[in-house]
Length: 133
Length: 284
Image 1 (cartoon, rainbow over the protein chains, first blue to last red):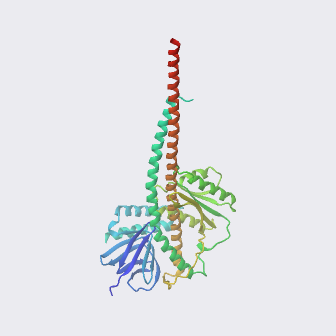
Image 2 (image 1 turned 120 degrees about the vertical axis):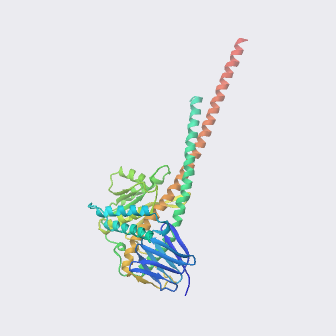
Image 3 (image 1 turned 45 degrees about the vertical axis):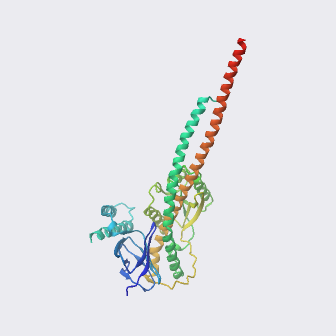
């Protein structure tokens, strides 16, 4: 049962992870899902949340801000917009981002892009939540 | 004939300038390496995103997404990417010249979208329609900035204010070569669909159209990010070349001036000697 599969996590600015994994737990748009070896080929989008990788080295948690997961027979690829290991999150910065997003949402100016402000609020809350677990 | 002292002063000041250009060349070299590694770091993501787009586009070929559907072009936009700083040879002026040509020939005349302070400054002086300016982006280049620009353009496209968007930028070929490229951003050009023998089809979650809805904006953001990285790398390469040339020119100038200075010195000595000899003759 304990099969491993190659996993790659890429972001626009770096290769965040490249190695073997036993399982990947990811925040899909329709809910959290787990990928094990032999998963059916799948393409899905991610919403902000926690991504958990299990392999021989144990369990590593990351926050993702959204992206895509592609599961193929031979490989699993995560395309993340940004990804951070939970241990490396700067709580202060996340809180500032939350503050800014709330201000933007609260302001009455017309040119506020509500979708974007809400998305950045989501991301900030996601990172703050991750550190509190 | 300039005096000896004047020429020596010019030699000294040329040497000072040479020190500065040499320092700038070194700095540009360091920044070029950094920019290049970022450009390379973006490649795995580019490859993967491209693959996904192709797979998805192949499966949803009959119903086209609005961002991929060409429509009658009543208004278009041109994203002009220059540098924030000068001292990089023809880097900025080449882009501006091409931009002006494109604007002159385009029908309808494209509105401009300036990225980078240099191009923005120069083009502002012309009587052109400028939709938006993004300056000082390259000092601390981040993905979020590319995202902002892409989202802004996408909004204009979706609202029907613009029917087509092109990008004009310098592409990094090698440390010694950049080339100007014009590329269509919107509507997203149709992808060449190839048969991938290893590909067996996916389960899609959520549905394909919804996924494409997510994937396309991300694709656009990434395209801009790639263009900004290309331009940034090309800029540092151009600056390194320009500063190398300047340093070499300064060397040539110093050699010339030193030669002249030596000649003048020699002539002065000769004429003084003649005077002394002449004076001695006269005393006999």
